[in-house]
Image 1 (cartoon, helix red, strand yellow):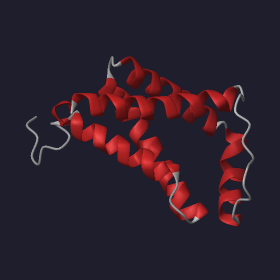
Image 2 (image 1 turned 180 degrees about the vertical axis):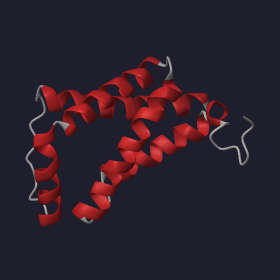
Image 3 (image 1 turned 90 degrees about the vertical axis):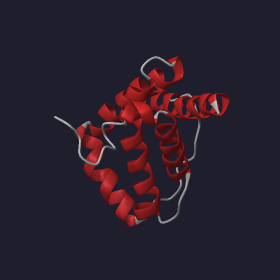
Length: 128
């Protein structure tokens, strides 16, 4: 189980660090597919605000924490909401599941693996 978690951690970390860094300094040539109207509207609203810059910085930071193994649960706290938002983008704006759904599932698997670090979050009645 430890090796499987390590492999999943590396896959998630590498995906986020590559796509995060590619945003700032493009090194992957990817053809942009035609986006549906709701996706274009959404991107048109957030692109000029600098929102994506902040998200990409968090992607790189969280992925480095996962890849290093130091503070991996903190990396998951940063990356899991981003993965969920990518999955929502894929499902609700693009109309079909894609990489975001896979990344979200892998993040949830890692949260399950590191569950003892998140015990307080899942406590039904936490003690103050």
